[in-house]
Length: 100
Length: 341
Image (cartoon, rainbow over all chains, first blue to last red; front, side, top):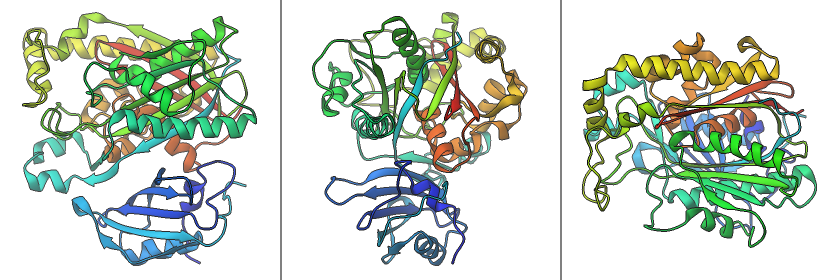
């Protein structure tokens, strides 16, 4: 399992993590690994801001691996505006709260 | 003023994606000299307007407050701030935010705050005063939202030593325990520095921002040419020290007791001269590094930084966090929070 500090960041409700079917939208800088996170819960409209996270490296394989480590199945990364990379993933199950 | 009976029940943010510094450097919108001076690494750029960002942040803050307190939080006091153009002329953004959040009609006030970048932290001072003095007020919602950019306010080049970023933020305050307890608040005003942001600018009948950048750099240089930077440094240093020391003394704690200070997200050189030096602290006690990623988010710096600390688990129950607001005019506010409690 890939080490990541992503889990507590995604505990946006401070009660439970994202539920199954929740979509995670990530836009990150390949040079630094800094990423903007947004979560879209099915049936609740547009994605909402879910914090920033610095991946351990900026490569797509690292990002995909860290997403997988928190139960997020990622799609194919693609270039986004302003030199950023973008990727979307879907949670298969509730994310464990790393602070419990 | 010492405060023991009020809490922060909800916190929400909506921040733009982080555009790396290489983009404006390549486009000629930012110079290598500016990059060296500020240390800015990226800044947040959003595709929604300020009041819309505030609504999204407010929705999350209210959702948290209702989940944490377990009952219906209804803020009778709604305060909103934006330091730049809201997107609509001659309009009341605060009522828009309140309406969009479904708070609706009822007793109490919905007001816009005008303390520039200090607005949200200063609004916490005001909300504390209202909630402590008016038992008929149950809760307060404070929101802020700004989107910069466009002709009038380029993110990277409008100001000296500051790169601006887009964000909305919100907090809910009430008497119920929640995310953090408010331990103390302190504010200070020095209007003699108002001209720093005005320079020799004449009064006009309409904004120039639709046609050209608003020229903050030029205005500051005009004022500094006659008054000098020493006066700004001295007056700001005194005010920063005053509000921080007062807030800490009122709560019976000292600077080493603080887990972190969330101060304005200036560039690195300004952070050192305006915040770190007056307090005699090092950069790692603040959120400077984070600020160099997201930019100066109008009135949202402190709440977005505190939210980042909470999300990352970088502060835990019992930790003391100081929010330090500084707004042109100038005003300063310090709010001491104890996480959990």
